[in-house]
Length: 392
Image 1 (cartoon, rainbow, N blue to C red):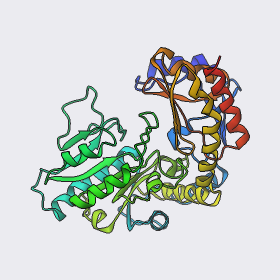
Image 2 (tube, rainbow, N blue to C red):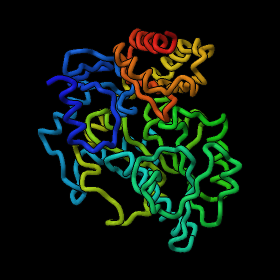
Image 3 (tube, one colour):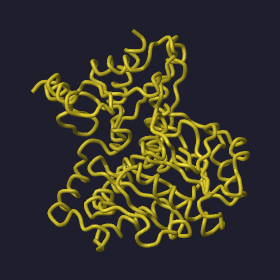
């Protein structure tokens, strides 16, 4: 079958909840993928950071295949021999006391929201049903009915939305019933938006002063993408809870988690939250290997080093009449175009023709997030293609 045959099948049988580029990937290794017609591409998206360790990393694949031969699912009705090891490793790595495993990033966010509300009722003695959380505009926390608000009302009560990074608005929005602030330390889907320096520290200080929780959604920004294990580390800030996903899977198997203090994570009683597949031995084995690869191959340090290389390479875009701004932290870069450029998608399509896969977001921004295993040579090659399409 040819590319157009697969595209036709998708359009006929799949709900149109995505608008993918018309490339049909058949295989992948490292930062390179091959389509059904044998053409190779360099991936500059990394499955929204789920593939920080690259496609089909041999060490993670080995862990997964070994676990397949043993047991894949037990449910949390029984214990398994992999989940406690993952919990210990993740908590020790990030400096937290407890974790709760789930499957997707959206589930991790829902877990944190439930934990924050329950914590408010237990520890702040907020009247039942009155807990309020503060979120920030253009944050991306998944697409559940609680979070995604464009045309899917009625909406879940109990949220106040303020402008991203506006600490004055945060202080003003806090009430006696506020339990938590939920934010991305760097906004991913919004176009790699980095808040003003000192914002995270200020949010932490406000939360401490008002006895409310700070929840960081690090599903995309965490586990090395920005050149730190967690993006909050850029300001030496430790949230009360951190939502993780994406790269925790190594790109092999859905796995997410929330880590936090024992005070917060212990609010759950048996039966109040869970998942049949959350914490299964397959997911735990994969996540253990994924973390080991990040650490032992020094991918976090690599992201910081190559991020500087990338920003230096793209510095010439400052004089490009089509480019409004280039933003980046580690190997996570957003090239925001001016409206007269006509949108970012057409440039992503041109990149695809040149053998580089990237994705537009918020209409005007090209985001670049290659797997952290990328070589300096491949990174520069891909960035040359970016400059070619923006400087015709």
